[in-house]
Length: 119
Image 1: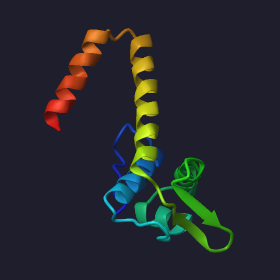
Image 2: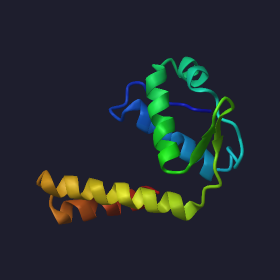
Image 3: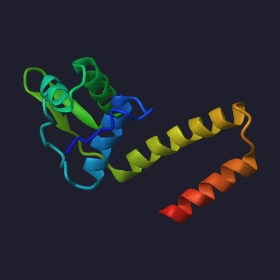
Image 4: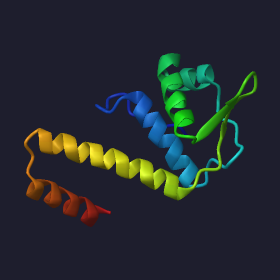
């Protein structure tokens, strides 16, 4: 369920963060559902518990999950608009970084158009 790619250049905590959001949007995780503990999920994925903890901290910061002391972490009532705004903020940051790295506006537009065609 929580598949990640250990060979990816994307940090594991980011992959896990995005995977949990994906599962929520696909309604595979519902509001109130309990997530595995940090230790359980780390063991299942074969990663350091600190990696899972970082993903959970980011999810909690973004109000995607909430924690109850001694009980665990649970899925919040997340609206698709909330996720959309977060994704757009990430996109804006990536565009700014690309422009700073010397990628032209036309190259970015071309890449976006290719991405839309694939979808």
